[in-house]
Length: 245
Image (cartoon, rainbow, N blue to C red; front, side, top):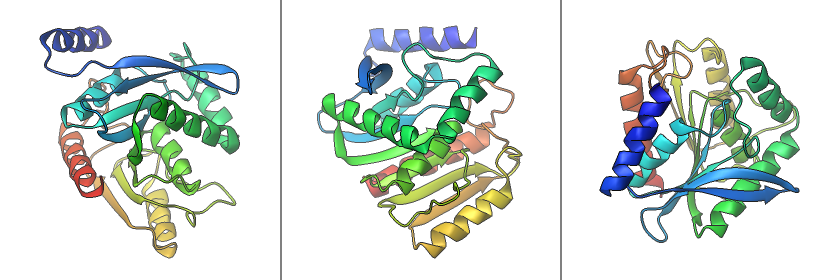
């Protein structure tokens, strides 16, 4: 029901012209089809590459994309699973994300494919920041470690651990971590370890935690949602975009 209400709200805003209309985008990576979402309020607008949570690209990512378009940013929400693959069962979500965690080369190829697809839509990939939620937060840190030439990387309640054999030596942009202090899925010990790694590599970074906020604290309508932490983290993110792009 909540998903339906969000969809109806977005449809009514499209009809009124209150927000720019986005579009789904089919693109190919290694012979497989992926389905992203692109929206741009103006030609050559700064770009946000958005990576979804473990349930795939859905209404939540579309809503966040619309919110960013309202602020003047183009958004390409990339697909990490494949067209039509939007897992509803926890077991399927774990299977899909685990496969990518165990195959970082494929993860990086999918990220590059998303950037290529965004560029094909006319997006300004030379003036871009990547963001991700939960699983997506872990994914954009992989993009940072890969040395992608983006200006920034932002994780909302994402995974923070660094895979064995990796580091941030090649990272080009700054990093913003927005995390819940009450997150038991991604602990404060992992948060502190990442801070040490970024400092050792002299990566420009900012890391914020929000009291009482559990994992997935920005997900509208869920029992984990924390309005105060969502509002504060979103505002810091918007300020970061103004500073960075």
